[in-house]
Length: 423
Image 1: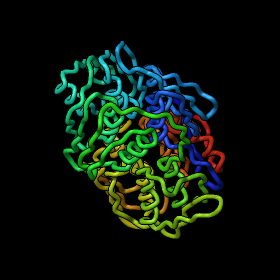
Image 2: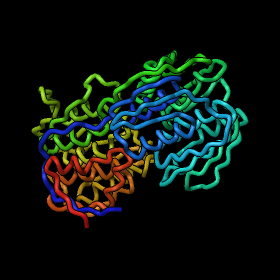
Image 3: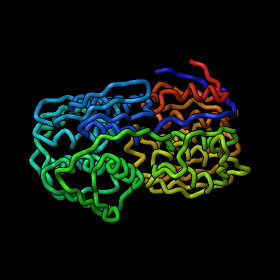
Image 4: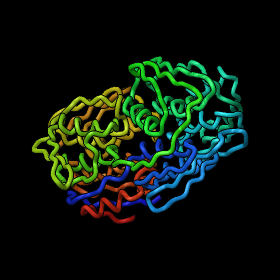
């Protein structure tokens, strides 16, 4: 853990947004399932992406690194052995690879660290019970789960309001099974944009899925992934931190964003406009300009990862804002609903936490404060952006947690004029 104190400064300059972690996970998995050679370029080696790379290696893929490019030979046979996969703290790695590890009969040991073991897996456990796949959860706090069995084609009933990662995990897996399958969504689907990312990536690698208006997904069995060269586009969930900084008064231009992206976190553009920002596109890139930050009511159901930094924007709006349908923030790396409210309160903002929402009454600036990242990369980066409008230093207990998704964040932060020192 590295404790830092940030000196309040607005940020200025041009920054290349790092590649999308969500798309990189998906591209690596698809390439590793495709017999033949694929090249996946634009890789940022965050801890989560390293976990997926090592997980697919454990399942048999041959993956070589050449700078920011992965050369992947997916000529593998899944299952038929004993495997250990360390998901570290990556929920995507865990939930995407769990069903894949059971394509053929196998015994798989999943381990991890942090709070990953406390994040819900009941959706899969219900499927395993139905299909008589043995599983042993060895620790109630830390991820330590053994699976033993084989997944079969079936009708899979999956809730849509727990995590889209369960649905994506099945979408990667079911085309490889011998029979046809159907995924039925039993509750309203949240984070639909992440399902779109999965479907788009599967199509690029030759897999056909029939989408029945997001209420059901029809999957033909005995399909084959096809190798594909793919460049990972820039990440809107990381761009959100700089766009909010612009809304708060910084002057940052973001390059290489795909304005037509299907990433669900592209919703940050709409949220910025809702809060009084104007999206300005130039030959150099895009930025947000704003005369007055407006309060807003923001639905978190489709883009929960944006909410920590969006709550920072709400803290300086001229009025009261509401972030609603936010219950899934409680089952992330930390309880982000509680953590976001506590952050704002520590910095002098009137913020109220409710069961699945928060109410924030804005002020003119943030007070100096000592805050905790809660070992959550998105909380830490939101706190750094908050510092740009504070009237005194912001001390964060651990900056190292950003390695989970954006290891170069504080290097980029200082390149834009940000200033901090280690305590």
